[in-house]
Structure formats: C-alpha cells, structure tokens
Image (cartoon, rainbow, N blue to C red; front, side):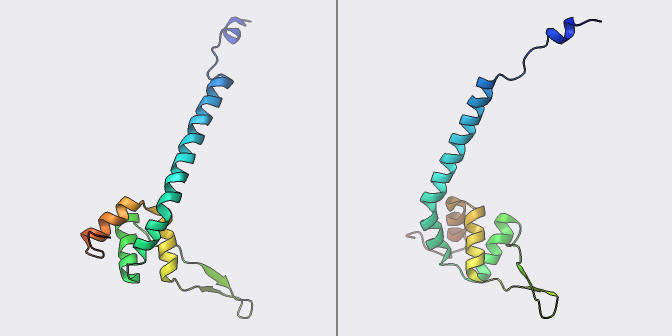
Length: 117
C-alpha cells in the first residue's frame, strides 16, 4: 500500500482562511442592511406617489414579476381563496426587490414624480 499520497495531500482551506471569508461576508451583509435601512423611508415616500397600476408596471418591467398572491384556506367551503392585493402589498414587494436609485430613475423617466422629488 502506498500511504504517501494520503499524507502528501495539501490542505484546501485552513480554519483561519474560512473565518476570514466568513467575516468578509458578514461585513458585506451588514453594509447592505445599513444601506437598506437608510433608503427605506425615501423608498416608501417615493412609492406612495405611484398609483397601483404604475406599481404593477414597475414590478413587471424592473423585477419581472408581481408579488406572489397569498391564499386563504376557507374552513367553511374547504377550498382556497386568493386574497386581494393592495397598493401596500406592491410597495412592500418593491422595497424588498429594488434599490432607491432604480425606483427614482423609473419614476423620473415615466414622469411619475418631478425632478425636485
């Protein structure tokens, strides 16, 4: 038996290297979370200027889909019913999916808000 090959294997990742990568990923996530929190009030205020039809178009054009429809299990009939989607549903979906810069550019391009906003 040739045990030389087993003992000559190189270590792929050392624990210190793994911890360094984990720390970098953690920093990136914290940075993105901070940006999200800072942009949140401005995103919400901007999206309030949209009509529900404009929000639907924004979802289709920039995200490529609309918020998923929530369903309700009706115990009386035993069936499922789709819950209606309101303006707030679209706003919350867009806030999660799109950055402030993209929303602002879309709103200016489609003349939903003025340059001063």
